[in-house]
Image (cartoon, rainbow, N blue to C red):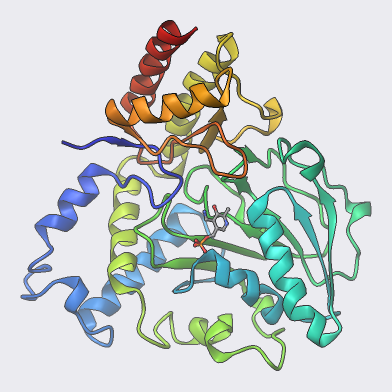
Length: 363
Ligand code: PMP
């Protein structure tokens, strides 16, 4: 029996995609072996690689002056790759809107301190436990900063940017790990977009980086070959052995997203699901969503009951009801429902029904 998996990642994949992958697992389209067993230097895998890239370009309307690479290391390795790939004036500005944004800054500082770089936070929402997204204006950004780093959706705290910061000529580097393919983004407003796949795109293992061409030759001399975006751009993501099975599954997920009507259809579906849960939370006297209303995430919805004891009980009992991984991140406690693209609306409805019953039994 399949459960509703509310995990922040790895998370649910569309059932239809899992079935398609299953059907081709032993013999991929007549080649007599699984994609997991295919050489990445052969024609079959090269076609998968090319289609994955083409689908992402089409779905996200990625302009021609950007390249897309599918690599290993997760979003966390990009925290280090970013300051090593864009080194012009040795300074960059970060918006600390959550734990991952903070980790990105710390990693850059850890590298930059050896090379006289100045990486700093220009705004933070830590004062209110990251329950909002700071408003960034152009005057806050150093005009000679190499880049402005933001995190579009804050997975742990359940917030997201509801605006695109105006950074002037400073390129914006955007961590879209927990929201890629969930809403229609204007890629041309960003210099670099990166995301670990394990929420909306594929199983863990593949990381996507979308990088503007003019930002590919600004790397620091000490940038390792494997971290250099240009290495993988020049080799079409095949410089070394790629995470082939995850990349292939990203292709299957994106084929399916396209069939469903593309990102606009995903966004509509996600807005409906999120509205259902937020409306329920807003009308409740028992549960509460601690996040600034305007900055609410469509993907990760946090909530608390009247006490931490009841929160623990909620998590235990919800698992028995087939609603899995609702425990909030240890930094915030409470509950978190991650409702990525693959979560059907029935999952959200089942959660709300459970929440009503739990309230009745415990108020
Ligand atoms: N950024 C965000 C917004 C995330 O949600 C996560 C993972 N939950 C990461 C970065 C780290 O990603 P990875 O595990 O792929 O390194």
